[in-house]
Amino acid sequence: MSGGGNTITPMGGGGCGGRSSGSGGTSGGGGGGPCGACKFLRRKCVPGCIFAPYFDSEQGSAYFAAVHKVFGASNVSKLLLHIPVHRRSDAVVTICYEAQARIRDPIYGCVAHIFALQQQVVNLQAEVSYVQAHLASLELPDPQTRPPPPPQSQPQSLFFTPPPLSTTDLAASVSPLPSTYDLASTFDHAASPSSWATQQRRFVDPRHQYGRSLSSSSATVGLAGGNSDLEALAHELLHRQGSPPPTTTDDSPSRTMSR
Amino acid sequence: MNPKRCAACKYLRRRCPKDCIFSPYFPPSDPDKFSCIHRIYGAGNVSKMLQQLPVQTRAEAVESLSFEARCRVQDPVYGCVGIISLLQTQIQKTQTLLAKTQAEIAVAQTKHSQHTYL
Image (tube, rainbow over the protein chains, first blue to last red):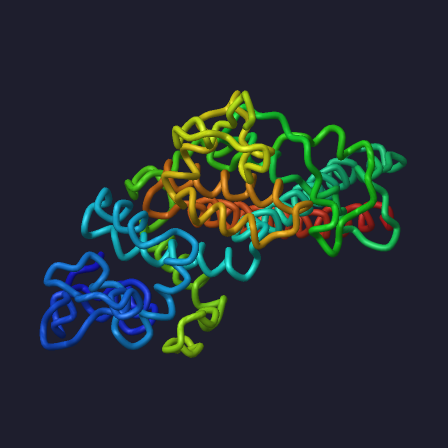
């Protein structure tokens, strides 16, 4: 993945603003100056600095600022140490994404994106159910048969908008805690409460639904192409967020993301 | 001092003051919740984050942080991004199925109208 292959190039190299590792002398402590993380932390960048391959001295500081604010340098360092070297750049990208999402939305972070996607899935599945029922009625020999009414009849649109899910619904998929909160105010297109809401009290974790387990192994992710899709997604998500949020330090103006 | 320490103060092995910022959200009945959050974010960072939020939004923030932390613990490389990827894949498949079914409806309607005409 990373290493000299340069497969991860969100902003000019591996990780968030990192140069291609193994070249360019950004492994820290060399003639290239401190890496973005050490620059932000105002400490000496030692050879073998764990952050150096992923946070270059130009744009890396801004990205690292977000990561430091949300996760903390030591936590990220510990996290990276437990990840194989060839997977670390992917981890850094996703960590940067989550950090920036959390800074932009301090309450929900990237979970808001997950909710939006899940809402989209639910809407699409409802629509598929409706059209399948319609198709079934058309294929019946009796032309008088009418398709069953949609789950929520909305004469204006075929797009049904079931009530939004709550964060604890989401959390319930990974913990046995019951859901107690509602995020009705989170979604602009939230529908009015209905009986559907009382039925949908548990978020179906896509990992369980599809029998896939998320792990660092590419095989278990189950995506075509292995890790490459996730890598691309992680970088795309990071790119979509635009430039990293301005930092509170005095030497990190907001930077535009490369390409 | 809160005679019954919250899960956070229990984990941190400290006294739980009456105004403990963690205690409303980390009951002692669920120690794993805080340990997961602490492992990924650290108590200090979470405390700062919560202090910067209005009180009425802190519960949701804790739940979303807990979810993200669990995702990261389960998948240290991709965390929540793995779930986002799964959902996007699911959306693509469902859109394909929807388009296919709509095409089948169009064919069925055509056949039906031809049959009726004849």
